[in-house]
Length: 226
Length: 226
DNA sequence: AGGCTTGATGAAGATTCGATGAAGGAGCAG
DNA sequence: CTGCTCCTTCATCGAATCTTCATCAAGCCT
Image 1 (cartoon, rainbow over the protein chains, first blue to last red):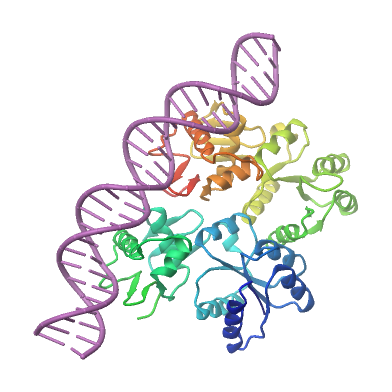
Image 2: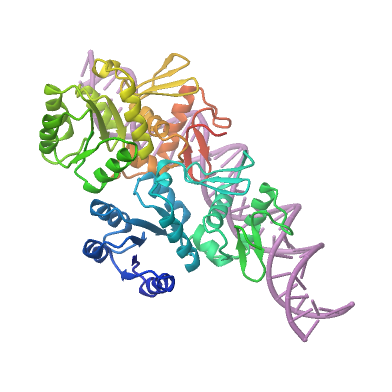
């Protein structure tokens, strides 16, 4: 397995987690190195950051696809970028938005290895389901028990970030970075307001939530558990 | 079936999708090779990229047509190029603009194989239907309840991009790249104006659209789903 | 239980966004 | 060269949305 990220500490961290789960992991810090390594020893799985200096992740993905059929997970900074990647038919097997928990990544890798190759993500059905909730990233549509829920852009983005990382707890700052970008300044409790709006529209009770759970003192999360 | 694209990864990707659907696929990366292969074993279908180095897609199409009756799908980067191709009577059976979803390509191929061969451009219907709206990409004709709607080139292109990617939300920038090309510079709200024109000609109310929906803060989309 | 911290929520002003009409200008046909 | 069509830019209006603020409720610790 090959982890590609220009931020060395992050690459190491990720590699460490994967190694702990028995994977044989190497790292690369730029596109050229990644392609060279992939040629050399064909890692079964490549964890690939989108924003690489020089040759970017999209290009790496395409080149690697010319000689290898390995699994590729793309890491993106923002949910919106996934849209673009899908539109470009980049051909990665899975996408993950930063920030993500190492545990989440490991789980995704395992899930990917378990299922047969499929590219539904790039075929237009970038759907996901949480109970009676369906989220279509491509059409930016949310349905609750089949009924369309009208969310604003920000509301959708917040929900999408949480939903694409089941079980992961996001701090307000993490959510803001994921949705608004790192340059945003202002009161981080802005997130609360949008969460409240989403909850209202989903008919979710904050004291006994079905979808978005509050983790007091930390942030919010979705997904099963507790 | 033969896939011809000078971008090897893309060719492989496309071939992979088609193989997954049971087609027997070979690839070629330039015009000469494509023609040679077509002579050798007459693939029933050729997926042909327009922008090939050396002998370009148009030339390949013409040469192949001199000795084979196979189906040809042309891939173009821009909708407006379809114009040119039709003007030149290239004689492809269908056209597809990049980016396209793999599923869409497969669907087009199947649809093409299903219908009997027609005489070239005039009858090779690259039609699609959205409610009472019919779009013929080949003839660049739009009909609303059977009535011909007169759209300008740009108006048609914008509509075509949206219509060929049902449900997908396009940002203004994505639309501009698809229709005007990546090198275009200017105010991205130009898209709004053309959308307004199309809507007016289609009798579409922006506040309760039947065809082109506004996704506030993001862009526009067509297709079913509220 | 009491005090402190954290989160939920409603309201309101500020801001952004989209629809549209109009005008200048480029390109093309005659 | 002239007139026409179409593209593009610009400005404006109205509305949707964002963000801040204030207040109230709930959780946590001692």
